[in-house]
Length: 234
Image (tube, rainbow, N blue to C red; front, side, top):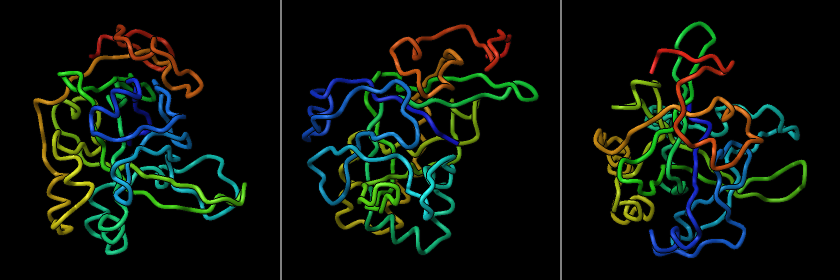
């Protein structure tokens, strides 16, 4: 399960990267989490970044305790569901990021957070699905998105069994726009395993707290669990 990531670059970096316009209310996030408004690009407007809510809205008016089913959608489920395949064909988005967090289990109820990032320090795009949904609390329409996840490959599988789907560098807009691409081709682009792309290091367990969102939490630290106990596991 991936429920945290980072997008720490300046607006100008985003615009140069994919030749798109960034929104005025974008700001770097060091601890992006579900229910926050974060930068994406949708297939309906591939030349503009918008701020969208991470997590589809629940059908009931209460939105407390958001379920992972509302913010992550495993690729295997999309493959086996005609409903989600339809969403993939018509409601794709790119989730703009430069890293993500995963937690390594090192014992009963003990886990160590890691930040996973490109070796070349480049920006990356996660595959996502989007929709315009009703926020019953505010009686308004909200653009929301889900992150597509998959089984982890090296080196992420040393930490976790799952990870976000990362679209191959240079092919982001091809996947997003989907010109002359069938659903099978779109899914093939999400199954590529680039083992040389990523590296990772342990970070402070304070990343568990979504209220903490500052540059210090992405720095490498000695591995410690969520209780602050240092461990030999790395």
